[in-house]
Length: 204
Length: 204
Image 1 (spheres, rainbow over the protein chains, first blue to last red):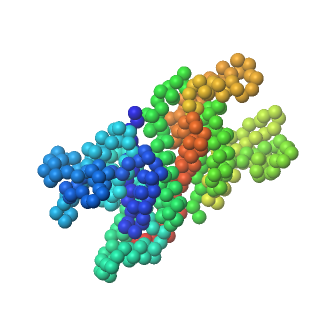
Image 2: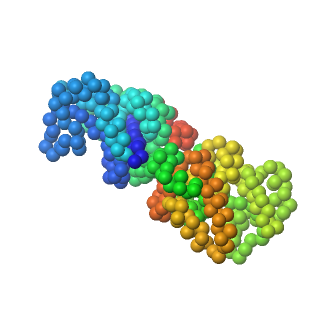
Image 3: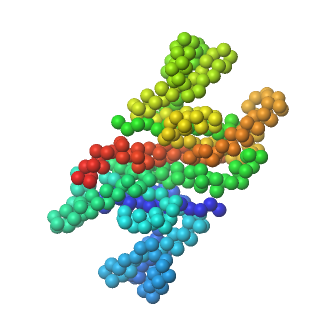
């Protein structure tokens, strides 16, 4: 069994990451989205292990105590965390994992998961980014200015990523991310591990 | 204008390289096959600059004298050569180039073209490789044994390549090579060059 790969997807809010994530998961059954752990109660229609791993506050704190989280945070009184152990276990079973994360989180993940593949999503223009951020709701001008500043800060880290996808036409961007995942599985080291018996037998 | 990429395709005879080359060229208009120079006369239906660049013996020898060939050889009294200059010029115009070559040629090309991407094609099993080599014609047992030995020698160099495609199901292998080409165009350095104005404006 060959080990799975970890794909990190980052980019400013407004770049269209969520759409790409859903399209990739729909197109490639071998990729699974990293599922966070949370202490909040499941909402109507949510399934344990699908949207989140729902755990009690005691369980969550025990996991944190064992250092199992790549990152965790408390939001509105509920704890949320990305389990390093869950990702490692899934990859050991040969599962490819997709992790949508901010650039700070991405740096931390890369330090822990050496072979992680970083993909950065860019909007097609500054105007479209601003338009998308403005269309998100009825935010104050102050909130929008802050979002734009955050986006600029994220984009300054684009050089830390292996691949860059400009999300201008969504169909093309979806093909791009599918291509990246497919190509990464074909890298020599992954293939040598997966097909070692074949390569040995071909060399007679 | 961003520079084109050079893709080197290698693998033992019987791996199915030619089929993959044709499928990739049909699927991706931005990839062009490297066209060799030759001194032989064009055959019926052949066009200068499509199958070959047809040149006189004098022109060919002058090119060789200027060190323009990556490799050249004489076969049945005709000269054939891969022009380094033609590849460099095409890449400078933003053209991606595909070069089908043996492992020795690939080593030489990688020394000259630093960013060349190597893709190695493997047959799905030793049995199928032998069967394909036997089905190629009415060769003597000796000739087949020699081809198998050559194939084993080529396969020993698989570790020199960036990507490995196992050509078991041709449709999958075609998707693989299309994915590799697509992904390589999305690498940070290529994208930073292609979209430098966008990235600068987004960091505004």
